[in-house]
Length: 301
Image 1 (cartoon, one colour):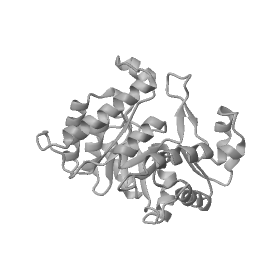
Image 2 (cartoon, helix red, strand yellow):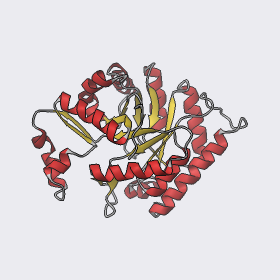
Image 3 (cartoon, rainbow, N blue to C red):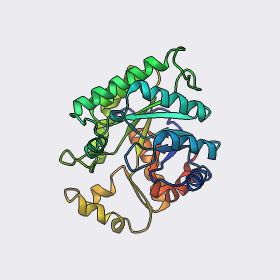
Image 4 (cartoon, rainbow, N blue to C red):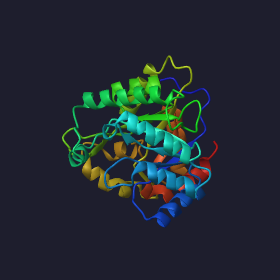
């Protein structure tokens, strides 16, 4: 696999998932800014904060971080209505929005919302239509409201399948790899981890699709755990119990887990940028504080 000649500087994001009253939400966003996070993100799941109003509130509470969705479930959205939400949010956040889109993977949420879930192919087809329609709508001066950012709002697409990776290579500024994939037997969105070798293959496939791009995309990885500890085996034992097909060594080698001393974690983050090209890392809200020392060590590098 070819590696970047000059690695991109790191960017760090946090995906805020827990609903909170206005004051607590703004305090949480300010804390993320204090810790050095470059991007404050919100996912798109029922039971979690509604993405766009949450990001507008985050913008009011902070000055520096970018604001994004990781990721919107395209199946929840009509492209024309989504275009209105996106442009309004970009304007109200002062041009700080980064739009993240995915195909959706939790059937139970679609059932609750009374929306069709469809097959994987149908969901990716809808994602493609959404991306292409957004580009058409937002690429005209006639669309109202207009976004604050020109020439466009940065687009992130998340997913590991071939058709999503091809779409990402064609349209996205950021290629987001999950490091986990939905259990095909689950309706509740249970995720199974992608091994280091499987991720090698997925990133290589993306690079093949993206070979003709004028500008390389930024590569993002969503991390599932951060634990600064001397007892690596003890921390990952609960996960090992849930995925008995993996050995302890394979679990400790999972790219989505950062478990070890601060030095070990910093070395792992640097090694994964070298191996895969991941310069944009996102952690889940429960690990926002734990990851902060890593940001301090690697910010700007």
